[in-house]
Length: 335
Image 1 (cartoon, rainbow, N blue to C red):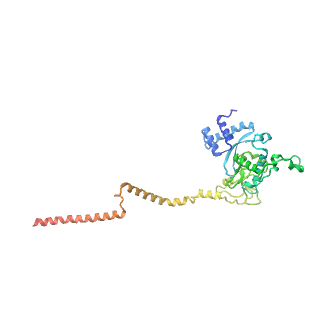
Image 2: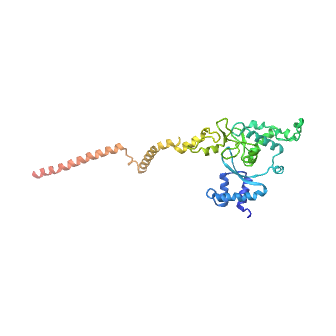
Image 3: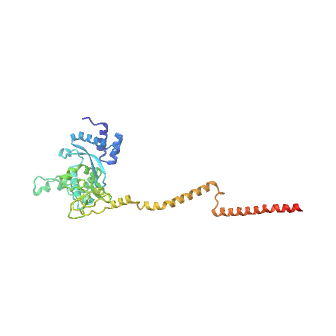
């Protein structure tokens, strides 16, 4: 097998140093190192990733793509395929911080609603003792917890929460809610499946943020972006794949239909105003021409008409005068 080229190394180095890259950024990087656009050279792009993963398999690593369920964007990153005690030595987080992250993870995936987020207050109040396994179930097991777990203060939780968000293991909203980050979606695919997290019936990926069937007796859940793709056409059936219940239309779907079928609210007035704009533009050009030509040409319409009338009267007088001159001459000759 041929070794990886500098192009492969550049792609890997970018993912390892910058962290997960969005679909747009990773494609731009691929175009820069290969001179080929992935959209037009999809086979070359797939072969490049396959080549990288064949060499990374020896180290139990993988270049993987995932969808961030909060924004629906595709991200690429390098992940560790195994999770053992040896691999934990490579992390910068302490035992207490890892236990705190596990508690946050469980609270987020078990959130009763479909938003896939918890409040910052609930995040701070997550308990760590549930994440530590005590071999014997004696009554004094609480006292045998590691000191770092028992003494993990609220200020330490807040600091760890900021670090996890900065490192993209978690994400936060402007309203202060906490959700999973891009790195969690990349790394925890096997964890989701091993912990019986409900899957989307369309893409078979774990549903962290998703919509539930309106039928309370149906357990079908579908990602919002999967719903948008499935129901993008009006003629497409909106029946639930599980029970056949009509799936309600989402707000962004309604906006999308308006954009496809006709002009939006912003477009309609502009179309009606276009003839007026043209007339105003013509008038402006005429005024500009008059200004450039000088004050003598800027004659009002009524003034030009009156001038024509005066010229017509003068012509009549001249013709009358011309007709009378021969008569006077003939009289003088007779005398």
